[in-house]
Length: 378
Image 1 (tube, helix red, strand yellow):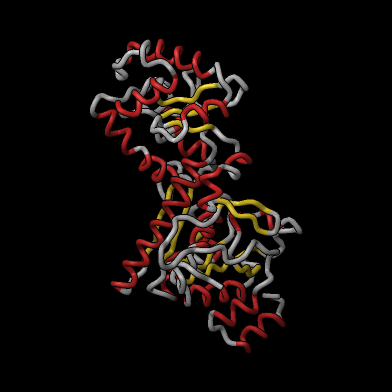
Image 2 (cartoon, rainbow, N blue to C red):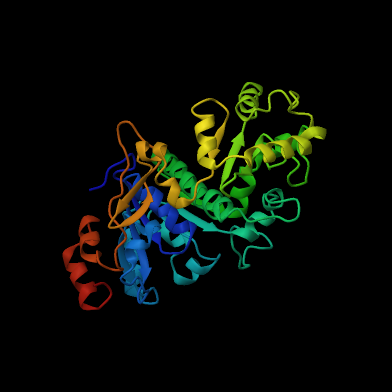
């Protein structure tokens, strides 16, 4: 049973990859009734339970080349608050499911479109992936070592700049639709979202506090007190003691209070300071450093693997990770005091819910029987 602040919200999701399913998971975990339109013949297989970002949704598999399937999609959209897709510009129009058609059937619906490059612009129809999208925003150039940019997983473009901005845009537009009675199209480009995420660095650059050079700035590994260091056992720790009071605690805990400069923002000293930190942290194991730092405000943390993170006492106490059907995964976030979200169900094989979806969404049983007889739905 659905629970969460979005309970009662109906969403039609056209199945895609990467950030699209992740957005569907966010909405479902917050209580929305998300129906995923899969392509007939798509393979989910016996390993569907591992598709964590497909959790919490019911599925209808359709052949979108059939007019009966298109009409069913439109009937679902008539009853939905949101529909979203992640195809290249023009694909939905060619299918007969573009915004003009859908909004013509439901003027209150919010129509979300997520692509890497956006719906218009010289790159709009190019293929691409997260690394390409963040490359043109300045974000990728700022991340990495002094020798080369390094892709930060696909968190900045796909999930941060894409899925999160899609979820935010959809819900903002739903609020507007409920007050005005008018839906609209939400154009989410991962390039736009990734650029938006760099706002603070534009501020620092405008103030002369940021150089277009990797590992030379406060937050990119250039500062010795905001970096990672290897321990004696080959594992790593992270320090982020930016504020002077926390920096002083870090110096005391590492035994460098008497030898390290107190002027932590003297950039000319950063290379030497970093060398001293590296030498000190290399003298103990990660576990030993955790014991030394204790609970004091040194802004210190061990760098954990994904496996280790699930066993961290803080994460365990907050139940940040859960295990369902033998598959460990992140729990819904954020947390609500009155209407907490929950995982509605694990991912299932495709097209297992057609009858229940159509009944729940008020589509008549006679019409459903016609669709089943024609082989449109299971």
